[in-house]
Every structure is written in structure tokens, then in C-alpha cells.
Image (tube, rainbow, N blue to C red; front, side, top):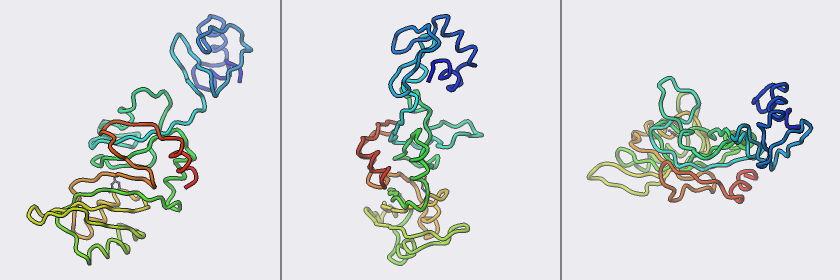
Length: 238
Ligand code: URA
């Protein structure tokens, strides 16, 4: 792609203005000023700058980030209350990223962010049934009966939940709470909270720890890392 077309496509300038920038020597490709309007850019590899500001390190590069979302951040783009957004936590990445699915404002844990729309679609589509695993601290201790109900399907709003799993991994009958490991593969709004509420054990704290075989591990809250190539391949083939 020619440099002026690239600048226009990126929304940096009109074609005519882009030509002006080039002729004025304001554009650099890989550190070298270009004056020739017919200069082509390699979208995969070139670093393009306008007035020393990098426009895009890599036009078509796909980025995959795993964030440990803290409580008190939203994952949707717009918010009428001006609350903090998970994207505020991503500092050194120029590409526009989008959260893959949602976590509630009060939920913490594993959240993927990417600019790969195909992968987002794939992971969030219910028919792919990718497991989502959560740790939920709940009021009280679910009984066998309640666990059975939870696992075999509950009527929530206007849908019935599909197969789910609930394992109690810690219980404290004096303080009357328990920690449950929950596995679901759907992604309805506030689904885990609503399911636990329905069986009489409201959530006090909720954290996502795993998506398919991708694990949060011991990543600190508010920190993020790039997915490994193996993890990206796994998600693409899931
Ligand atoms: N289920 C919920 O209730 N909340 C989340 O954030 C994710 C799943």
C-alpha cells in the first residue's frame, strides 16, 4: 500500500493532506524520512511515524492480552457513570483492543482483550461451549440438593441454564460461607450471580480463574500479559 493511501486508510489525513505531510518531510518509515509519494509501506513490519509519533507499529498485527481485571472496572465501552474502564489499565499497547465478553463491574479475574474480531466472535458464541471457570465466595453452604439443581439447569429470567458444575472447595459453618468452583459455558448477563442467588446462596465475591485451558495463574490484579503462541493457537482451534 502506498504511504498516502495508508495514512488515509488509518484516518490520519485525507489523501491530499497525506501527500502534503510526505512532501514536508513529516513522515518516517522505520526511522527514515520519506519524501517520495510512491513509497510503499509493508503493513506487517514497518514502523510509520508522523511528527515522530508512531502511528502503527504494525497495521494488521493481532494482539492477545490476558488481564487480571480488578473489581471496580467496567468492560463495556460506554458508561453513563464515568466509571473506570479496563482499557485504562493497558498502557503500552497502541492497537485498539476490545474485551472478549464481559465481566461485571464487581467481578475480578481473567479477561482477554484483543483486536482479533474473529476470535472474539468464536469465543463468545455459545455454540463453542468453551468452559468458563469461576471462584465464588457465597453465603452459606450449598446442600447436595441445591448443587444438583444448580448443575442440571435453572430457570433464570427467560432462559434455562445448560449443564454447569459446582464444587465446594472450602466451607466454614461458623462464619456461614463457602467457596465454590463454578464451571459454565454460557455467558448470560450476571449468570453466575443469578444462578447462585436462585439456589439461595448469594455471591459475596466472584473471580474468573480460567477460560478453556487458559489460566489466570498468579498474575497480580490489574496486571496483564500477552498470550503465548500456544494459547492463541489453542483458542483458534477450540
Ligand atoms: N457471571 C456473573 O455473574 N458475573 C460475571 O462477571 C461473569 C459471570
